[in-house]
Image (cartoon, one colour):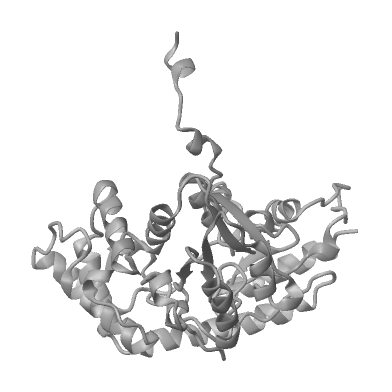
Length: 403
């Protein structure tokens, strides 16, 4: 028997879908290398350099020989700084021992889902959702349950829809505000109404992904754990990638009741151990840095959001709510579906539309199917204004060419 025929992989790996955002980024990169002038609006990554004080702290850590393992949960100094940040910014009281530093917020999300969920459990995930939530739930043996939201409600879950979806198998609700992929931000009153539903069900927990917390426009961020009775039932996930343009540093964290945090630390200790010592020193510098660099970045994002939103709303068949956070737009393109390309190919899905725009217009977007919302698509405006202007010209030309 050949080695290939004898190979058997974990069935949960076989069932896992690859990340659509990473796949689109890779395809756009391959087209660029082949000489095509592709503009990628598919990646969720700020196009800014990491601020100088953070870079300097990382360089100093290397030069001072701070290059060994730290405690599995992260340096005490970093966890204490995170606890101080959560108290000052979010009104949350955590000790350093209730915080786990990880190799990015993505790992913290995975840890939270895996330690809380088991085979037979259900995980409620409002859609449009970040592409990794359902796959993480499945890999934990749980069943992801999609809760559709409407473009007319700004892609926000209602308490009525939440209550109707809860069963005796429901274990976890995943929340993301500001949202990837829609940029939706729940108001404090909306979160309070959702929390009231959660409190009515024993054994129901919340994972609150707050990685875009500081990327806000005329909106207020409220941590889910800060709502009455919710801190003991919430895993708060955050990190440094988005607000501080530190995507490549791979540094995130979770804050949770001690039994949940300790279980997550146990899993991390067997899989990866602590994040990079250098990144942890940089993280401390980020938390000590003033708000100026973050505010400058958000101001640039606001200008880009306004420009792209105006251009999208002028397109035939496109509806797009105004996002109040993050750096994404999620236009609703149902009225475009069914059209034909200049060569007669019928656009049957968001995926068809995105690949048409990539192949013929050289603009990379991510199809809505990846986010559980097949009548939309995600556009990241974390790119230069020059690239955004060129990309919107190409998208406009491409959509106007449909018949």
